[in-house]
Image (tube, rainbow, N blue to C red):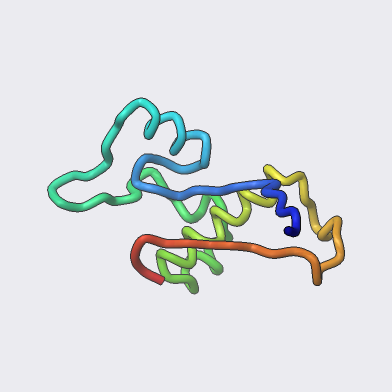
Amino acid sequence: MKQVVVTGVGAITPLGVGASTLHDRWAAGEVAIQGGEAPCAAFDPLDFLSRKDARRADRFTQFALAGSQEALAQAGWDEEAPYDPERIGCIMGTGIGG
């Protein structure tokens, strides 16, 4: 069996922006469903993307890019990958969209 190491996670959710916010609010039993919908109202793409990039990307791509930035920051990665690129993986998921 090969070893897998998770070095960073990111989350953009209706419960908030950031993995720690998601964890804290979820653990507290909070629910973000409002009128049958669960909007990501706290998310502002300009906190993560340039105006040009935000305008070019659909909402779910904006979520993915912002969550990826958080995961890479948690992992301590900067401009260059600290490992052989052929040995790096990224798993992303969405409940709907994209």
